[in-house]
Length: 331
Image 1: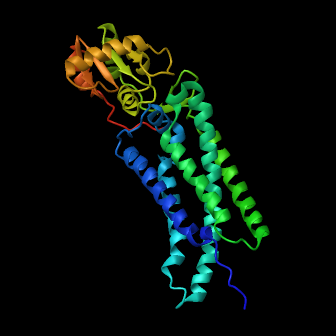
Image 2: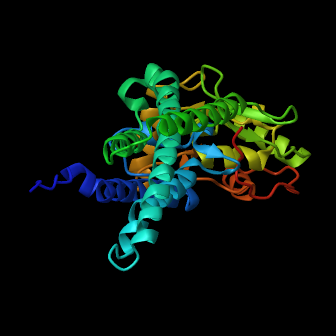
Image 3: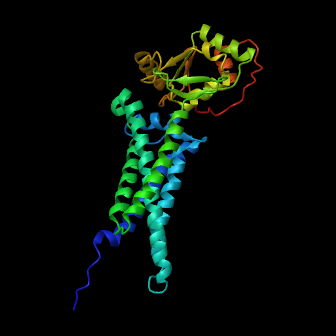
């Protein structure tokens, strides 16, 4: 009498493990996506998360890159769990077909996610960590790359692949398509339209586009603020700061009394910002965010309308401001 060979533990539980990791990925990317769409800041031990997630590399086709990651993790969870919903005793053929087909989809999905995550890690370390050290690390991004790696490993060792050639062929096709698409997207990041003004860091990496034009009222207000000693304390990676500049328009931006406070920005004035923002927090009784305006000895935190800036500074020039609020686009 022959003894029946037992199924390895990893084969029995690999789908549940993949699903569990995918659910962690869903929570991770879902949190980022929610914060991006609601225009709030993610909770992070360093400024790296905000710096990376507010960069042009965090957007694809005008939507948060994390949204596509969320959809990918949802698909992986669905592929992993779908066969488990079918009773193998009642519908053995359907269960077998589902298992075979979804394993191929899991492998293809994990391969694409692994390669794309690898490219994003390259971007993070070459563009941010190399410049800011630990303050250039996005821990949410690291977590997502880890999840993608674990799922890829589990698709390889989670079942007995009889046809290794099929696996190599599928992996090659998926890998080539993913790499071509990823590199093409990476090369397009930072290509700004010729009619737009860019907001960049000290190395020239573009973060936002200013596309509104300036009227006479916007230009005169910017010059008045500069002449009266006002100051806009802000950060190049801050979307609200860009929105403030967008209200002025691209021609008037050069006249705004702008003070760069972010590490890695052009002509950053760290000591001045620390002193002024400290004074602002005492006066406001709360944390001074970006942008913070200092006008005639008073502080105003957050994006202000041009009418508010005109009233606070005593501006008496033309006030037919033409620009309305507009969310800044990224290159």
